[in-house]
Every structure is written in C-alpha cells, then in structure tokens.
Length: 236
Image (spheres, rainbow, N blue to C red):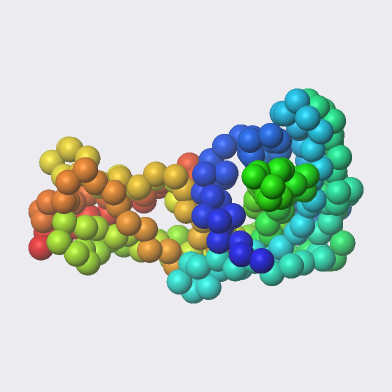
C-alpha cells in the first residue's frame, strides 16, 4: 500500500482542530493519551447527504534519523468498532483502546488512519473507486517524556536557506513556523508544521518570494508547545 499521499498531508491535518476529508470529519485531529488511559473517545461525523462506510487502521509511526516517515501496521491499539457505518449527517463516538502495556520511559507514536470504503462509481462503463482518507497522530506520553530540540541554519544554494532541527529528547516536537529576518524585514519563512520524533533530524527549506540576501539573518523557530528558539546566521 502506498502511504506517501497520506504522509504528505500530515502537517496540514495537525494544524486543524477538526480534520476533514470532503465527506467526513474527525475530532480530535491529534490524539493524546497517558500510560493510565485504556481508551479515548473519537468523534466521527458524516458531512455528506449520503451514507458512508469507514475502515480504521492503526500504524506504528517511526522516523529515520533523517526525519523520513514510515508506518508499520500495529495491533497495539484498536478503534472500536473498526468499521464505521454512518447515515447522512450522522455522528458517532467511537473508542480508541490500548491493547498493550505502555512504555514508562518514552513516548509511543502511532497513526490512526480512517479510510472511506466507497461504492464503485460508474464512469464511461468503468468502475472507478474514489476513496478518501484521514491520518491522525496518536501519542501515548509518560509524564517524564519531553522533547529536546535545537536548530541551526545553513546556506546550501545561492539565495536559499535551510534549517536543520534535531530532537534528542524522549517526546515529539513540531516546528510550526520559522521566520528569517534581515534588518527587521522578513526575507524567508516556513509555515505548516513539521513533526520531529525523538532521535530524528529534519531539514526544512525556507520559502521566499525572491532569493534570500547574503547578509546576516536573524531566525526565529516557533514550536507547537509555545516555546521558541532564536539564533543568527552569519553573512556569506
């Protein structure tokens, strides 16, 4: 199964309070559990005027040292029921339950993916299934688990700046925004959110309307927990 299209939308989903997939929505979009939680409620709403059938799958979410994502099918968690049938405009509260003991030393990370099971649509005599999917991060976090993130910037191409952020802690962090200023003017920016799991390092490109000047830059990195980091990038 090709999960790249799902992984590509993770940052946008994480920034919303309620995730949408055209015909159904899910809340919360990020699921937080503690080691004491055996289950947590998830609300699924059918926004369409027709019935919808959804299938839930859970994957262990890992990141390589370079920050690339991988999803491995997991039976540590289960959504009950795993098949959800919703009538038009209907809403249902389901339970995401933990089946295995938690880890007292580190955060466990998963992805709950809800996929539509559509009826085949007829297009010029060919049945073409059109499925929608939502991917939600699930974090099971012991009290002592914390992120520890540090960032640095590098110029790798003319007019381009990249920020490298490494998380050496025991819980995830998310870079929500990076702003590069020069002489009080913003010359580069990153927005949208980038998850960094423990032990991973992400390379983040700054976008700009024109090449970023070669002079000294002041960078501000803002994280989803409200903390921030500032540092300077010397001129070329």
